[in-house]
Amino acid sequence: TPSDDRKFAAALREISKPTIIVANKMDLDTAPENFQRLRDQLVDKIVIPCSAEAELILRRAEQRGLIKYVPGEEKFEIINSSALTDRQKWALEIIRRKILDEYMRTGVQFALNVAVFKLLKMSAVYPVYDIKKLTDHKGNILPDAYLMPEGATVEDLAREIHSDLAKGILYAIDARTGLRLPASYKLKDRDVLSIVSSQKRGG
Image 1 (cartoon, rainbow, N blue to C red):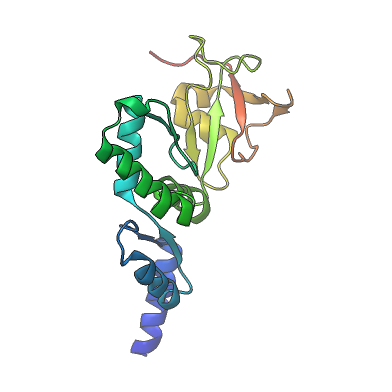
Image 2 (cartoon, helix red, strand yellow; image 1 turned 45 degrees about the vertical axis):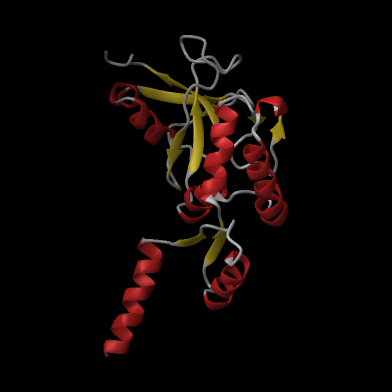
């Protein structure tokens, strides 16, 4: 029936295209009421409060050396108060009081994390060359992070890095434990691995 078709289509979309609701502009006076209404109406959805403008202001202030702030963290620290104008101080105080004190974060990085790691079930994996120093050939510490889908293996990671690496893959070494891992090992979030291959990467 048409009703069954709609239900099937809705269920299929939920599986193929999982969705979160990002409630932006939480810095507005009407935001708390609207946010609560969204949560009441969308009880089966993840609804994340967010202020993209607050995140932008904090990142720009951090880039200019005015504050210390890491995206996604629950607070920021003013490190150069004398360089701030009265309007900038007012804006930072509004962000602290209306966003961070109320919702713990601006929501931007949190929304991305939820989408990638919870909905899409991706894992962040860190391939390295030197498992003791956690560096690449040039000495850069943890230079790359690969987002791998659920069920991905060491061989899949090698293929993402370079096809030649995958062709001659032998095993990987877990940087934390020093254990050898087979090419079929299923990757976990925050794995740090060195892939051993019989072939060198192409140029």
